[in-house]
Image (cartoon, rainbow, N blue to C red; front, side):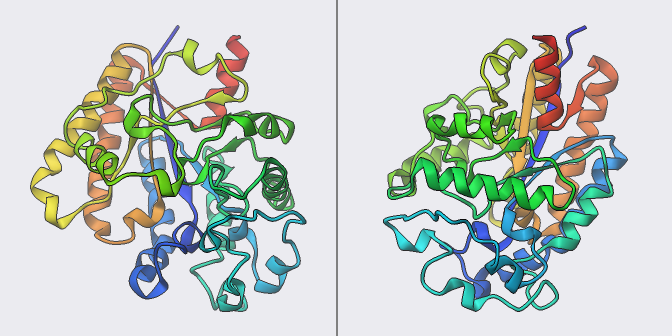
Length: 328
């Protein structure tokens, strides 16, 4: 029997995901708080019998700076914009010696914590938070980066089968490499022009403004997907439905609209046997933690209601991909 499906993915990156845009001075507390956010998220997911895909930057697996430096890819991306590369500008010199000294860049204990919850998935967010649409990088440097991401996880007993493209820079030319490396699924972007994958320099304030509005009122539609749509490609594309924006004190008067926008689309998916895919970064919850977790719990309560009323089911990215493959 067909049912609606609820997918959650989290882009787990710590400082590696924001290092070209933020500093430890202005954003470090958000990053440090991820060490509380992930355990709390895992507990909340278990409370509501929800599973998620923790798409993890490969650098986070290492326990020490020395270990990281000994495991760099042989082919590195040569971005024209050097600020995008962690391999440039002596960035590695700024790292602490190990995960006890530097919780901004290493997270082996958090990965161990996720592993304690077998219903959850650890996927890859690439090895180095790799930008697939930026000028200067190549297919071969992507291949080497992804190979290293799969390898470092394998050494920890984790089989990587899902990938999320950093900054949602989806590049269909790279899907064959993903398949070759055992990746069965990825998170594509919403269909609307608002969410079409672009490089950083081609992103516009106009699109960003409309995406913000779309979080509160329905501009782009419900962004839910049929089984036939999802299983038509290999690797399987499980596109985003909605980015869960963090609580904003300035926009707190709109919180009910933000919640209604998500709940209405979840209900639409449940009633019509479609997939709804919600995602965020753990560091988005690193400020205003109480408000963010209260909001998330309301979403999960609605999932529970839909599960009981319409048999709406929770899947990780890879478990949904496996189901699609088995059903042909």
